[in-house]
Every structure is written in structure tokens, then in C-alpha cells.
Image (cartoon, rainbow, N blue to C red; front, side, top):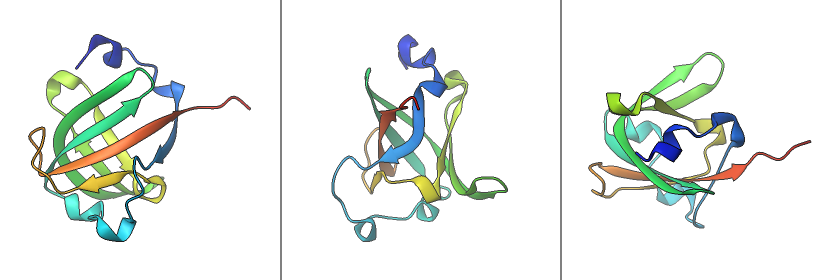
Length: 113
């Protein structure tokens, strides 16, 4: 992981996730289908693309609803949490980057009101 990504301000980007391509949600696995699997998460950020891999756990959260928790290696010192009701990314069943699935997410900069 690059030092610039480690030091990124998590508040600099909105929680909204957008699809990288026009894939139909019907043609891809659900977040629930990734429970117990390994996945690579490709984050397309303004500063560049970062790919992180980890083990997925699908679970309910009291405040967020259904979420997919991606547990990253200890060296990352963080985990990713994908909120199902807001997820508009793409999930592809491939064996790239050490995972069974590839989750593509494009972050949009947060707009000031």
C-alpha cells in the first residue's frame, strides 16, 4: 500500500459509490454471496487506483443495515466496510489479486454545500 493512500483523509470522499461500468446488478453476484470469500477491492481514487485484498464477512449492522466487511491484512491497519444499500460498484468473479472476486469502486470527491 502506498504511503499516500495510508495518509489519505477518509473524510475527503463521499460515502457514495459509483459503478465503473454499466454492468447490470442482475448479472453480478450480490454482496451476500461474498460472505466467507476472499476479494480484491479496486478503489479508483482521484490520486490513482489502489487494490487491496481481504476476507469478506456479510453481516447486519444496527445503524448501516446490511454490510460487507472486508478484513485487510494487519499491515493495512484498517478494514473496508461496504454498505449494501449504497453500493453501486461492480463485482466480478475472477481470480485476480489473490481473491475469488474483484470489487470495483470509484470514489467521488465530496462536494461542499
